[in-house]
Amino acid sequence: MHEFTKGEEVLSLTIIVKGASGEYRFSPADLVSSVIFDVLPDHLKPDAVKFEIRDTSQGSKVLVPNQTLHENGVKDRDVLSVVKIHGGGG
Image (cartoon, rainbow, N blue to C red; front, side, top):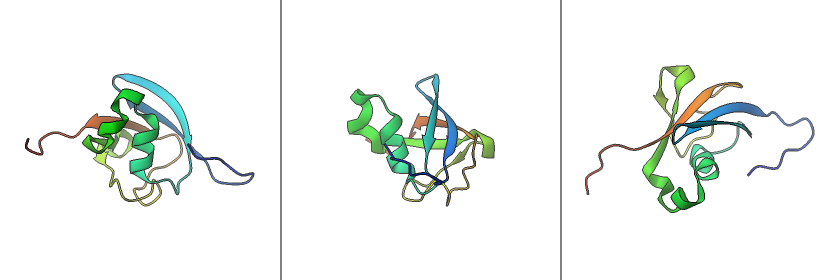
């Protein structure tokens, strides 16, 4: 999890994981893939690449995992949902 320094911008986000919501604080510079890993329960972390984040404040837009929260347009107080990626074969 990100360590914040005094004066650093912080996003306060509501993130829904497996039907339960929680309040989290992340830097706008954090990668979406890192956020997914940080909020998943420990038993799901090995499969973190099988999950994506949708920003319900942007009409359920799927966030690009290798971009930052800022690059994906995430704003303070947005509500995000971590969901399993559908499809992909297998």
